[in-house]
Image 1 (cartoon, rainbow, N blue to C red):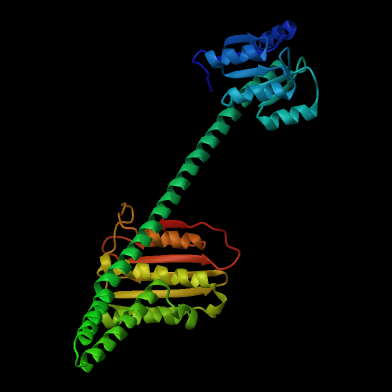
Image 2 (cartoon, rainbow, N blue to C red; image 1 turned 180 degrees about the horizontal axis):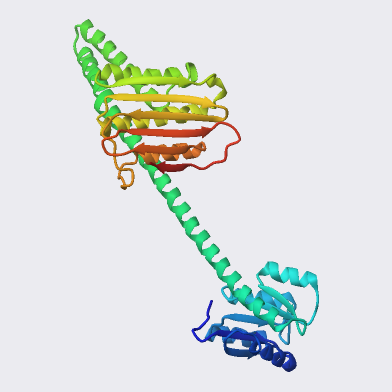
Length: 370
């Protein structure tokens, strides 16, 4: 707080010579080491001095030739937000004192109505309080920056996930459905160009159109599964697991469903659970080399817990990872007050645990790696 090795530097903003002298003598009579005392008769002169030099503490009279009342302090505080200011007033006005303190003054002393000991304490405490306040403000700014950075990471993860979904959709439309329809067009061109009808090509075209419709239906399910609205979350998840089991018999699932009544869950929460499960299963297939997966969904009071555990290779959670899978899961959980816990280590598999507050929730997700 601008304290030199020799002692304190003090700026007194006071136009009355008698009050100037009294405060100077009082300062010298304390146990403080006063390195320098500077006098300013007006607020304009004080502003000039503050632009040229710095001080440990400022004593301010509210009634000066060029400024009066709390406006004087208001002008000063705009320029000296990091220097503690003690009001030295000839008026014993409690309302002004309270207002000055609320505006940022460290203390309010009545001229001639304080002891040297009280003056010393006012200076020491004023400097300490100001220093503490600046530390708190600095910490808040750092935390605010971290929150902004975290939000940017989440936004980036969401955008990346959306781009991946669009890319997957575009590839599926181009490489699969487009090829089926191109074949249909070729068959129909052959039929139309030949005078003799080719019933077999028409029938083949009809079958291919049906195949295209089935592919579109399956693609639609990956975008917004209608089963959530038709048969509920439990059956939708079972449908996902059944399809995976049909595609690969090397992965074994165990599902523990402990939801008394899923109709009490919001559609947003059910869809969030569905999407997170899809995302984590995708992560497991890509990286984990797992043989067994345990999915647990249970509700106790207002807390709903989703747990997805595998016996794969695991990973070091302390290391920064380039993938967006877990970031995307965290961002989805954040939208619905999810608390994310990741329990993993190399060779020990991975367990993803997410707790949702079903009622009276406050937005914000926390991710913990253990």
